[in-house]
Image (cartoon, rainbow, N blue to C red):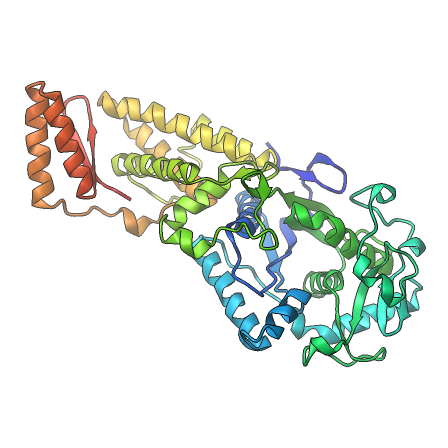
Length: 460
């Protein structure tokens, strides 16, 4: 099955076709580095990684750019609180973002351009919009003229949208829907300012992404990604600037992931209901968090709960127990051992990144093979199919690493308890056997009953 993606620009699933054969240019809106990214942010960042991995699975070479927003009102507010200076603040939380990304097995992007490194290019970009009549100066603030651009409203019916950027009304906007490209310096901005022909100031968010995307990837890209909250107004205002200036399509596909919700509200710093990734990593493995974030379709809301994380942890235990039986073998370029189930798994991913269906297919496959393991009827073909499927599954989901699956020596105390438990089972003393199972689990081991024996597995 060829890759299909839901394009927010057309509101439908479409066959994916890249601009250049076997190459994809992909821009992703990254973090605003004024605080540590929360789990809701990483729902989006893991989604970016999913898109990239599925493209690679389909033999595309992907050039991915994830921007770093280090000029923003929230950053200035944080600096003004006196907690940290500008450079210290933005460096700290940029590093936190990159470290958490690595911990959650997110593949490194090709570039992470920072807004502050490209302000001259943004000034030049704004000049061009003014020269073409799409932007105007109002007391040192530069605004995009939405009424002068007939195609404004790519993602939403603009007539049904309430006025935006009301806080800028006093700055001399001609139209309430006009949005800021350049913000004139104010006293509270302090040293966070750059010189321009309109006076000191700083670029606004929508212009930052417009310039970083085109500067890094060119004027036409394949895929632009972001969270659903960025669809409007951020992506609407970003694409308006680029397409007004170029009079051409900027991105062929726009992909948006839904919110991670907590108590029926989206997880957001402004709502004060975020879950800190560092805190969660103290309770759960990175693989558990990643599997949880990929267990729902990217266009569906995820509802956060400890129970769901516990369920993901149990799923990981099941995967790892299966791997203990069949082993792993990262075969590359071989199709000799691809099962029908693995083909269905790939088809599910190619159907707009349907991770829930793909997971269901994988666990159905495990259940079928586990039945053979229990019956002692697992063949060499079954093992090879399993190893091939495991390798393909893990390329996308990244929930285990090979080094952690090496055989570990079983402590003598655990072996003695297991031997005693097997004796109790043979004597049909089920209550005593269950108590011994509990003692074994307290020592960090799982015990799995087979048809004629039992097997010890290290808890993950």
